[in-house]
Image 1 (tube, rainbow, N blue to C red):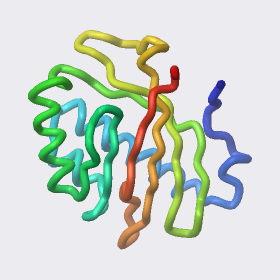
Image 2: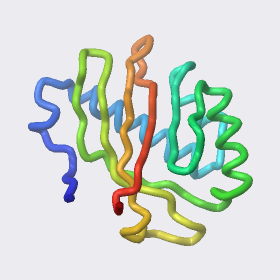
Image 3: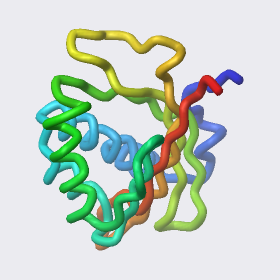
Image 4: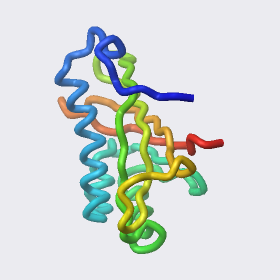
Length: 144
């Protein structure tokens, strides 16, 4: 399977500002992860947002997401960074969109991902009070 970068044809009819704002949501996740700030990570989600990661139970709501990420940053994700590139966006309505990204977790000191650690992620985004928030996130390894 190959995955290409977002192109203009995939976002036809979408406001460029909306696509940029959705990319900004991903940027907020990367930034919060780089600081290992579980609270900032969770704030990117809607209040009742969900997060599913391979090998982990579902985290429901900002509080559970923050608690999960705090433990992860102190444990298995200590010293890691996350990377990702949006590859597709589809609007389901004016205030709901699905963004697909390709990326993964970089170990301490790493700058590139091995093919065996690349994930594809689905981001369900919802515009709430004029701001795009993450309503649901799930990823799966690209190499099966």
